[in-house]
Image (cartoon, rainbow, N blue to C red; front, side, top):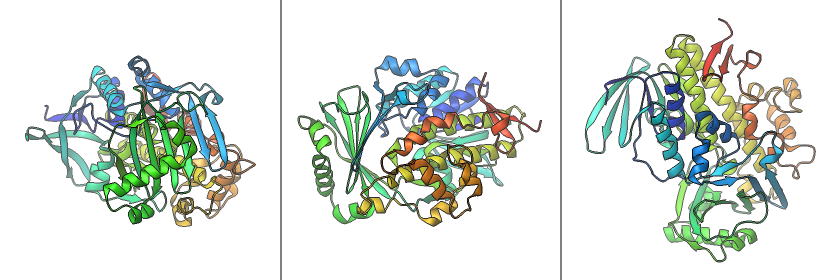
Length: 462
């Protein structure tokens, strides 16, 4: 391995491989270090419609189809007493997405990055980052054989996922949310029945008094089924693996639709759990470094936002680094653009998830009371900047005070008849592409994203 790289990318998941691919296309020398050896297991199988355009830009959509991943034509929700059928054809220009096995999907993206010229090393864990003053300048790594080394760089993109090399381990700037303090419990089933309701290949979400259940049909005859429930209640009820299995079994057999789906199916994997997964870093960048994807923030899995935020932030990071590297944009301005643009996208989805939970009519259920965003959490958000003049009916936000901005947005997302119109009808992740800062008219801090012939930043002040 070389001892110096123009850009070091830490992590080979969707965020790292996407950033590295865009950088390599721009002629930027990039080295990627991935801790694991692919394929490796990862949860998060359902890709939102917003991911489709990113896959098109990367040039991997045909590879996903050729692999045989199941097409996802939309979503279906049994949300309290409501039943919401959300086909992607309702979105202008919408087409299918995919339900993926992440071990295969992530490997396809990483292999594609190599084909684009990325120097990628698997089985190489970055142990720490060395700084000169407040600037990141080098990384110390160790491979599976115990060999160690150090690589200098001009810029580093931390896409290390939940491990959070910079935000969690180095800077200690990761903050857990006041809301969405939940636990995910899931496993896999063979020969589960397809769900007739909703679009073909849809992700199905079923609410219960204790939380909600996801059902994701995969291409290989396996179905991912998981329960999201309150962390406090989980801790009180589950003191052993047997307790966790019992909780999961009660939940999936209690809901009629899920019970029907698994009636003749066989559980073929162990029960897995994950907790404390909703968080955000206080900042996403600094001198010589950018924090991308799950390393920077993660939301509740309700709306399948993980891969969207990972790849979207990776594109922003690659554009920012490319423009810094070729000297067309000053580093301070490029980093500021990245931090603000990524935060706005994240906060819009954070509010959407919050409002979606609020649309559940069984408000007396303990779980759903626990999802309410507190006033303190609301006031941390940059709501005016993130939402102003973006969603129909939120133009009134310009007249809203800091204290009532959230309520104005919440009312707009609910539509005219709260409880019967899913917030995603008003604003979906696919709209992130229509509200991007990709022209001088919607520039952020005087910067905007240029998409063709490659992703990079343009400065309106030049």
